[in-house]
Amino acid sequence: MSTKEYELEFERLAIDLSWKSSQIEGNTYSLLETERLLNEKQTAAGKSKDEAVMLLNHKATLDFLLEHRDFVQLLNIRKIEDLHLMLTRDLGVPTHIRNRKVGITGTKYTPLDNSHQIEEAMFELCKLINAKENIFEKAFLALVLVSYIQPFVDGNKRTARILSNAILINYNFCPISFRTVDSIDYKKALLVFYELNNVSAFKKIFIEQFEFAVDTYF
Image 1 (cartoon, rainbow, N blue to C red):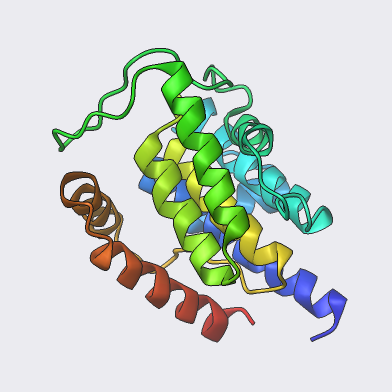
Image 2 (image 1 turned 180 degrees about the horizontal axis):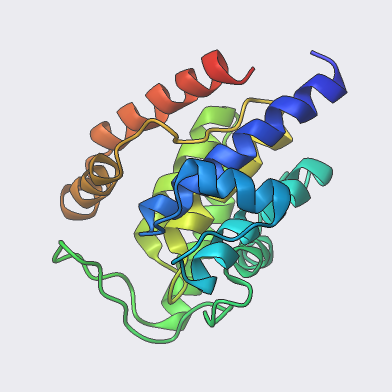
């Protein structure tokens, strides 16, 4: 596949990911409305400004990663914070490692609430991912562990999905749009991980969605 062909397919995937990743977080834009917003800057009637901003931020972050493919080749906390900032820009979300408790609906699991412990956990996360040789293992660990640590007040799962894809993009693998995963199934799989430290359900989603992306886009 030529560079131009890759970029064309990436554009289609980026729209799907921006839509689905936002939908998982409660965004009510349809896929068609998302296409109009991202391609024509046409907002949907009856939708909030924040919903449009969330979608536009996703697309802008993906465009950045396509242009700077090696951005996460050597991962560190600052780079994860930068991705989080891109995703939550103009949404009123604090942009640095949190220093207060956060709760997760539907689970008794309580993430770390001390900023020093969170930074230590994130440092170990980066160290672990950098040490792995298998690209899919790197991407999967980023997806589940950022979601588990919850380093930010908001935008954690969005950041996890983008970071996971950033790793795939860096190594010239197909990114994942998550387009066909049911939002409830996605959340349930995370809850199983939070409660039982069992990644089986989430690993199944990761594999199936990567296969879908390869078959559909590339």
